[in-house]
Amino acid sequence: MHSLHAVLGPTHVLDELTAVLRRLPEYLDVLRRSNNPRVPAPSIEHEADLQVLLHALLRLHYDDVRPEDPVSQHAGGGSRVDFLLRETGVVIETKMTRPTLTDRKLGEELSVDWNRYPRHPDCRAILAFVYDPGRHLANPSALEHDLSQDERSPATRVVVVR
Image (spheres, one colour):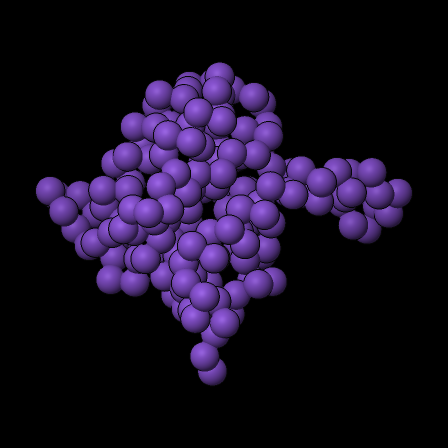
């Protein structure tokens, strides 16, 4: 089966994912306001919680979602991408802010990751999904603008959601 996502290319997938992820607060709000105790809102306290929720959301849209796919070793260190959408070549990194994860520190972490991820044989684009419910980032718009480059190879995109 040939995926429409693969045909349209990674930038289209980044646009699609950006639109879906930007609506995460509304999704959570519907669940929080629900009077149905059998459908509780997810508790997102840690990055691992965010990854479970994102994995489920990705499976709604993509057939081949690979969590923690390894990247080749380099300079004595290896890493894993949080998710790989194999059919589209999009790597997804999740970050959840905390008081010690400031704009600068987050930018540094993403720069390190983004130097490693292109070594993955399937990487055609990289999306960093940053969840900032505690509003620890001073200037999320600048972070998105400075680190998102659709013209780059691989294309990079940062999406900050509060």
